Length: 327
Image 1 (tube, rainbow, N blue to C red):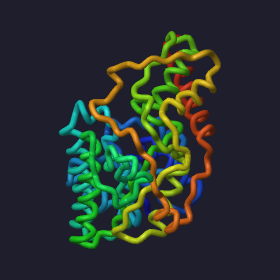
Image 2: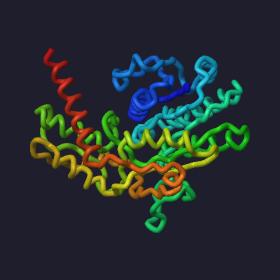
Image 3: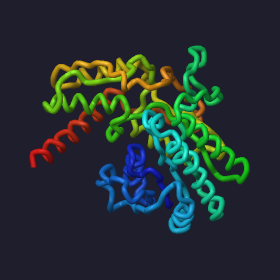
Image 4: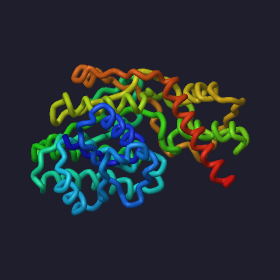
């Protein structure tokens, strides 16, 4: 089987590629990368995957890519995925996520290929829900509260339109908070872990700086997530949409307390107003029974394991930084 992963160098894409290489060694794993994409996250599997230069915003490059790879499955994970960045660069976020996804769908249509396609939308499309709307179902109203969320609404809807108009075999997911090693530093739990690692190493003083700690999130491990994505294309019908999420729901502040309890020294924190978003989504609890019934998937990795692995990953990065500076 030939599998194409867009965003293969990101957190989810790299874990997915590793999982496929390990669990399905018979598969050919191809990845779309830009010329400047860092390869750190896939350094351990570079000899087991095939990388192809291209750009979501360049339709011609996607047509060439599909003609060369002729994938049977595509996991479309590439995106401008930082909510905070989307407020600073809204047009770029919309162009990358909406036009980029449209270009991929157009390339499939133009080449006449029939791959199974996973389009990764986001729980951010639901925005700020009312207390009587949780747990959030796939039928819930869209109320996007950031340019990123708007872009994911567009991506979600254009994927559905290409299924309805052209019969493209596309399935959409709205994944709730998922984290673990390789999580970008702009996300709360990874930013907390990085700062804790720096305090432990003596690279910064207390306090660490945080944003809104009162948001409610349901957490999943990225390694459970990629297993869910495989089952999605293996078992689910074209045109469907699914919420996917974990089982541990808590305040962001409670998650911070768990990380602080794992630290090797006392950790203090303080709110930095610059880290508080202009508009925020503070209540995210998913209803995932549709996906679980279709696939039999359930999360397996405890949140404490996820957070410890994330913290250890940030500690390793911090040690590497110290060694580079010392050299």
